[in-house]
Length: 429
Ligand code: GLU
Image (cartoon, rainbow, N blue to C red; front, side, top):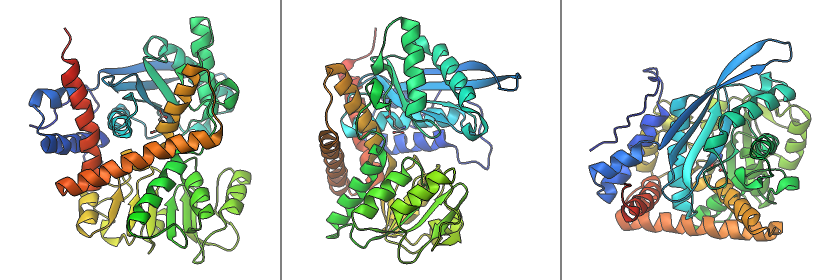
């Protein structure tokens, strides 16, 4: 039995690695491991709700433009749907559906009471003014008003969005329902109920998972050579925290290009440089320029792809020299490439484990909001670390017990918990 989604998704171009097909392949592998019934696989491979709304906006020059806004709710079996909102030119309904499914397994793996969702609009936010982005976000939110809410579906930041967009979403939702509803989104600014530690959370989670994997090899982060693709919210935070823990960050890249320094980069200085250069790191003194493709194949201990999906594929996998790969982005290593790496003994720390820090602190933000009690940053980081480390050990144990890859172990745990909840809840009516 293979996952057979009934979704009316647009067909992928043949040359393209379809993220939704990949997500279904992971589900199939986990389902085989769990010996799930065909009917259960059918339910789990189809999202509960697929929403596409029209988002008409007026550009600053007076022109009208109509955008397509997506929100896919993959599952609400374990709790409200949860997941980010992505603004990126490559967004498609297929990609959003795949990412929504990954959120379901990620939340289940972390043991937090959510289902999975994802939203997205295919725009390059760099090409829109702040006021245009505000109009886009507000119109998109109001089109989704009946489908989101603190116990229904809770958006958060993702690629191309941040606390700023979450504040607009929260305000639009609140104005529509007539009272302030901070719990409708997470990753909000602190002023409206955001959590301390949320901004760095995904990067911190990556650091915790890499540190745990190194500890299992009898090592610490001290002196470890790390290359990071991406220097945004995830890659930048992971770089700062791993650098602070003594690692040598030898290369970093963004969509503008990358830099390399044999003895390690001064990450706090690089962060300040990027903040002053519209996030470009090219031209940073004391470093050589390198391309994104070169960064991926550098000899290093740990490679952290923290940008887009499908970065390590069958085409470049044989050149990869890292011993550990931490998937800080969603799906940066394809299924085929993962199998090659695992056969070579490379440790691939899968996305639904390695990048779960963001949604874990989103959960802690939601819990603090619901209880009207706000914690200091130390408490947030401690609670998050506990959940991350627990999931890491569960994945390692499952992988050893079954003799399967870390990725399959993580999916087996996530999918297994959702399937069990589905069986226990039964089918309505
Ligand atoms: N966008 C992040 C992710 O992919 C965070 C989602 C959230 O906090 O709900 O995990």
